[in-house]
Length: 230
Ligand code: CDP
Picture 1: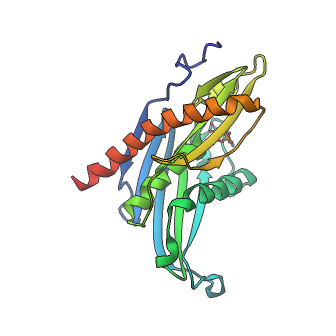
Picture 2: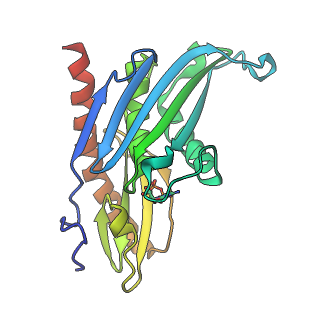
Picture 3: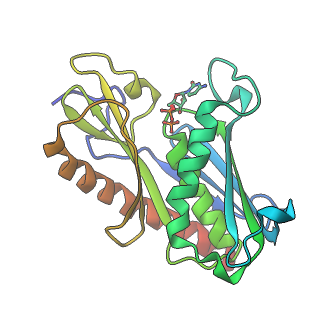
């Protein structure tokens, strides 16, 4: 068993923080942090989609925009969209959509803006957790919250919620990153990506680890949502 650079146990998450209602002018908003990774999400809508020819009279649509702020990373990131931010925006849309029923909002768009204030790995998963809370805060009908976390493989061993130092693990087989998202309280996964290699027989352990992580995330998300109604 490899010792994690962070000193955490294999299935130990970083400390989490969450807060709802952080952007008063948005229809819904939330912050979610895994350790030093801080994501904020703001929801605007449902509002009429322009240009009009893109409207769908049978349903509303979800439009996600994810971005890393320039100084969220150690080497300043050039502002504006990149291939990476477009990919993460797209997979976030796919991860969130299965819990939303947008048929009640024909011809509209729900815009979700996700910004990473500080990045230390796991920004897409932190962004999905924040966006899920922000959608709930905006009162969008949802089957349940989406919980998201990545499992890493350091050499031959799994490690939940790797930080950036762990993502750069370069001994033995190095690092594999597997970000996942699931519908809270179910076995339905809405995101699974794989950056690296993993033997298929380890996937069951990956899912078990994610289930444990997601149970903890769900509690943090629910607590933050309850705080605004108390
Ligand atoms: O952030 P996430 O793990 O979802 O996605 P990634 O593309 O695997 O990026 C891993 C980490 O690399 C980020 O969280 C940042 O800490 C770092 N990164 C960076 O330093 N500069 C970039 N332009 C992009 C990512």
